[in-house]
Image (cartoon, rainbow, N blue to C red; front, top):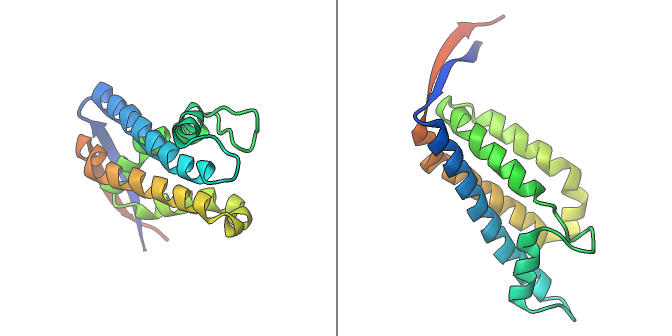
Length: 149
């Protein structure tokens, strides 16, 4: 069995790389807020769509179950920083394990709340696609394939 080790890695421009990760994370947050507003505004006695969108984008709410405090944004930003290296190295399993770890704690809740689960899947798919199409072009990775026992 071969052990794959990242021997070296580099980024064309750290400033540009981090700026792209930040801007793409903002874009994913905006899309997630638009999708979440559809869900929230469709409930009885709820505010209008754009009010729900704005509240979702802000990330704060008097109801702690509606607030996310920008934690998904932070995770997405970190994923945009890490995924391109894993993609270039062909280590898709690392991404799969991470998404599995993010999925497991919420699985029971998502069985009864499919829109939240679908938003989660859409957000992850977009982060992976943008990491593949945009972010991975800015990095280079050299692998060292070693024999392992």
